[in-house]
Image: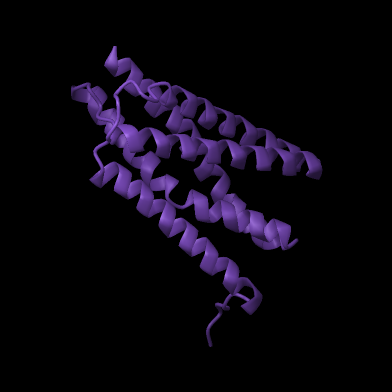
Length: 181
């Protein structure tokens, strides 16, 4: 006898939409970073990496504040902070896509141990960023449906991953800037 259960039929449309959105987002990112080599003026949107780092930093702070709020049973504050964190991460993603559409992939100009450290950090950042969008959508979906047991299970994994991705996004920016000077 199997102990796993299928998603309730009412959830299937959500999982289909979540899967499509996630695959499309990942495909666009892969195209921009792996196939497209930029097309614009190198100074165009040159401010975006700093703006994107600010969005990542804001998301990290908002996530921590949201966890504090829910531990204090301040549900409305938690909800507002989580929506703000999601908006900040969404603005980051839009800015990231715009920047890389124009510039293509960013190459780390340093060498030696710093380059190795940068690449290890970047790899962990990229790999862990992949599940953030579908997990965020699932967390919001189950919270909206008032299925808080499932919401909590998702967020126990999502919170540390999303926080790590947000913080390492800032570190990647800082390492690129430091190596470029």
